Length: 307
Image 1 (cartoon, helix red, strand yellow):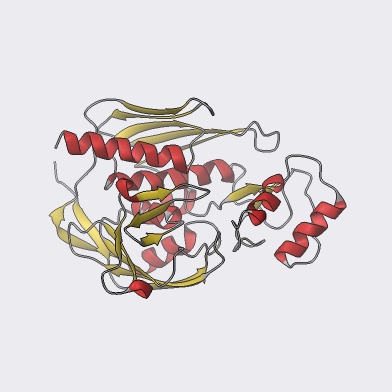
Image 2 (cartoon, rainbow, N blue to C red):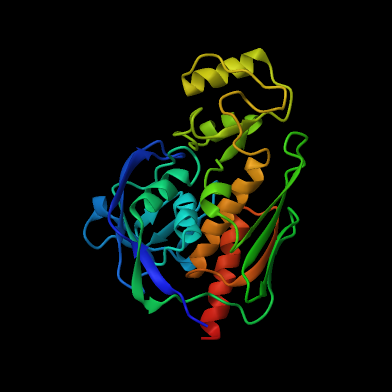
């Protein structure tokens, strides 16, 4: 069987935008990287040696997003970019960024994917290395009922179920395997938030960069005209309204199950922190950044101990 070779970017790609949680504007450049590099972040604003490797052992926070740190160097909200790179089969890349948070752009992975596909990938000499597990690995959260189970398999796949107990979302399922077109089926799916969470998030210095262009807002409980007006003021937009399907009218859904697909997008990005493309069968119920990265750490520990 012919083994696939590693791939990197063909040329540098530039992005600029605000971070979802900090609201800080960052300029970011994706650059080609040598074989065996993996995904490496460089905080150029902190100096020539300010690097963070995109590996599970460097995860320092999973509060509403995934943050990685080495020493005093941190980069946050990396999951959409990591998902785009993993979803397109990019093994090696250098990410230069001049602030703490990756730009949220439209809340999906699509801007990254379109740029990468537009410029193309470069095939490298070394064979692609896959992350495999020798046995079933399971991580559970007894409080939420969430779990992720990873089983050995020669044909990688991910089956995910999302259940927020929401009348609007219902139970959504999403699936990925090597026949899935990541660029069209998953990359366009945007992040989402429940209406009742937004004021809490603002009060806790999160979603400072949130706006009506980069997040789907789900209205689960009845809200007053005053609450909608207050949200409109927070986002500095004309008065918003609630659609009959229970979503705020700031965005039109790209898929009926866009929220479930976005959770799969996130999971792909977080599992990429296991050190590369995971060749295994993944079953996930109610995943989130915390349990996703716990699984990536468990895989790293298992594969390193067996290496």
